[in-house]
Image 1 (tube, rainbow, N blue to C red):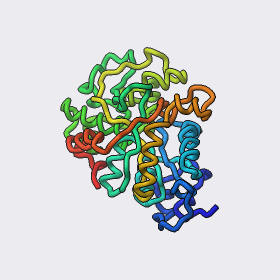
Image 2 (spheres, helix red, strand yellow; image 1 turned 90 degrees about the horizontal axis):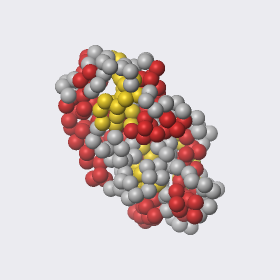
Image 3 (cartoon, rainbow, N blue to C red; image 1 turned 60 degrees about the horizontal axis):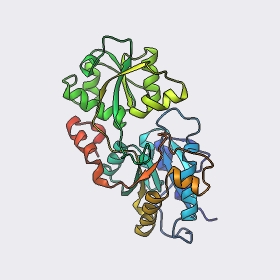
Image 4 (tube, rainbow, N blue to C red; image 1 turned 135 degrees about the horizontal axis):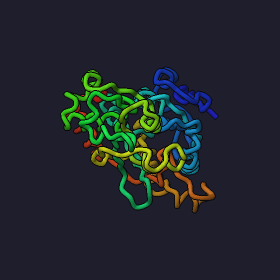
Length: 322
């Protein structure tokens, strides 16, 4: 099988930095071998973990199997070490398909990535895509009952490029008058920020008392970590909730071409869910996809993410700049 330079990423490079994703290839030339369905023989799917996962790929296996069946391509999964790895890899042409949070999607567009949304994940069948950021503290912490109480405290954020772990929390802190802007400097002037690196890590640091308060997305706090036993019901209390944030999504590099992207839109909107996975023998029992434990994927479009762009304007975050 012929493999072009842009696909020399390999699953063996499990934890990839932004530099590795950008440096390892060049944009597709249009001369590489293609499948009968008109796709490159190898498609690269990149993602970052929402939690400290030792086997992120396993949560994408049903998606990978569906894509391989429908496109005839071999799908290589690569795990980036941070948001920038996926964004910059997409911009550099080394990533064909990406799964990332809504903020990373918006930033990728601001920075010139040419891509098309394929679909947003939903937690359960029949529910709309989207989620909330939670402000959290220990249940026995009587000194923190809202965002105004975050002033002067040690506060766990997820990552400066995280939608629910930094951007929306910053907007909430601005609205409550706790910080002057969404810049890291202004946040550091009002509190002691700690960047935990993952939503689960943020919640665990709050539970352990390493942070007085923090932020994480709703499902991680309400379900995922309770199901795993990392949190017990009642360990944490929620003192703030954001508005609904557009869901995490899959997007395609526009270099794939209109016909291929139209096919992918159909695949993601019609067959990328638990019910169809079971019916087609991809899963022998109920399986969830991505480390957000989603039921499946529903159609999404670019203007679904205008709310993110608005929050970028409110916060003035340098992370939103091109």
